[in-house]
Image (cartoon, rainbow, N blue to C red):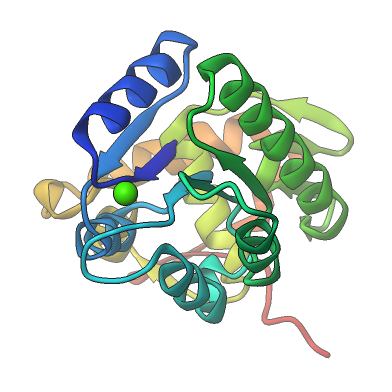
Length: 227
Ligand code: CA
């Protein structure tokens, strides 16, 4: 998912159309506050950030993102009408990963986006790996390996496994998992969780035992890490 913060509707719609046409999911926002609201629900894989905005400057928006732990490493491409060397330096200094001056062609933008996403996933892949026993999850690549063999999971199975592994040793109730993975709408349908846990365990084979049932409470993966 790519988010774009750009107050000019013409540019925003044009870029969103180009991204979607090339198979990317994209959402656009007119103001920093609208972007923040959206980020509370879902973090994007990459942000296209305009420099001149209502409410606050794009650089200010970027600084705040870099100061928050969950968006510290979010790939950001700054877009701007100002094409001076000074602005470019400012943009990169303040933590943008790339910088593109308006007017830009959509082909160039898309190739920069792809390059940045590739870079981001490479650097995550090196650092971010969750491992319990023979079970290994690479969050940036959405890949799961059980005893070295790649496992194909549904989105919900994957999300649930990732949540449990990220919070190693923590017990999640069925309702807690429903809330985290399915949202509030499904409250009360806790059997859904059991069904997904069952298929998840089956797919993980011998690594399925990493997910433990805590009778009368819910599920957990592994034990609290000891450092
Ligand atoms: Ca603008």
